[in-house]
Length: 68
Image (cartoon, rainbow, N blue to C red; front, side, top):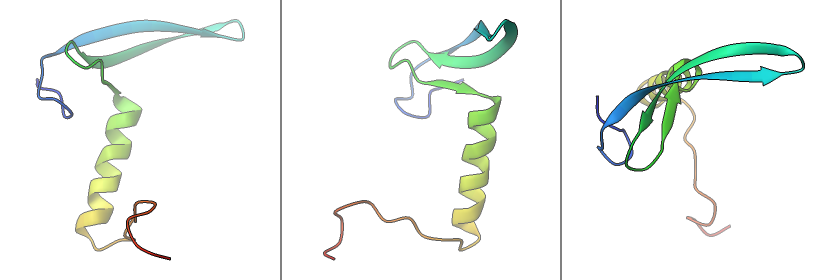
């Protein structure tokens, strides 16, 4: 699988996150070139954003791209 950002090689990156005495297994993909990490939550959010853009949802404007 290739990275969305730099088209580099991604590898499986399994981690354990410990917070407040509990642990959580995190399964993600990490790019070995740029370090971008995509887990299931990030992937779902990206899919939802793409769906909104194709359905004519709200348009997002970059700060400073238009005069106020």
